[in-house]
Length: 392
Image (cartoon, rainbow, N blue to C red; front, side, top):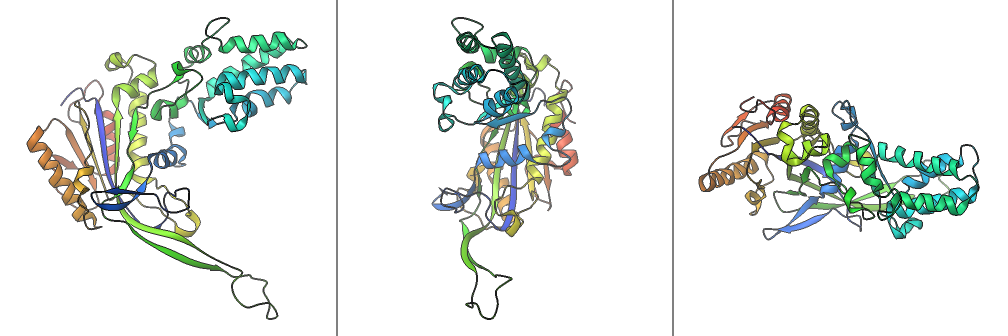
């Protein structure tokens, strides 16, 4: 098989007595599917834990990549505060520059913190903004009006410099940092700065109906004496859930190479794919081994995937979630059997145009998938789309 355009990553993860992802009421997130309510882990939760993971395969351990920061206070803390802490410029000038930059980066409501959405900026973009702000303050140390106009012109697409985010993209390889290249970003103040996600992540859900209970707990006061009122110093409860979760991730290979190398997606095949290959190697390890979770101290919700199936192909991806539309027992063998049966039906109806590899704790039979350990699986996935393609 040659010219793969997509990698599809399917996983089964099992977690006991955990609270992996909470809703606004503190309960586990849920979704109805196939006539049964399932426990759910949001894609945002999954991506964040992969993004901030600290281990051998952490994203920031990949050479030659740029970090990023997501915040509503980037202008305040990373652009303006360094000026105020520096050579004591005119406070009114700094305030005027800050107001223009807040609006330029976060939109018209950016002058109020409550009006800003957390925005992802690559550190090269942050440094670009800081240098521009510093230059304006240096060139107009006492002229508030001139400083304000110069700051506004940076973001004015009709006059002045204009196209600030476009200018930032032209000065760095990864303007939105590695995270922006992988998971995309939206900039309401400048749609041209939007980055389409190259990694598409579905919400994980249990292959069976939800399993939960309310955990009652108490706290003992170590200094409580015999003369004090008996009983616990505090009592409370929290929800605990258990489940076997199906996860699904798609890697858009042209989109990934385009975002990483700055080339057009239509020209991705001729671009350097070495960085994209390293990203995929790390991503496969992170998906398999990094657990999402709240209540880490009281539940230790750490687990590795029982199964990871990766498919490489050129046609539109399709989830295998429908294998679990009818709930299966919460056992990996039965869930893997349901997945294999559904995949076999798809193959019979649509033909087989994907190359597959499987990592699993048990010897499951998945149509057309050779079973390999995780390191080999990650290496295969990282090489499948390179110039040589074919069987790796």
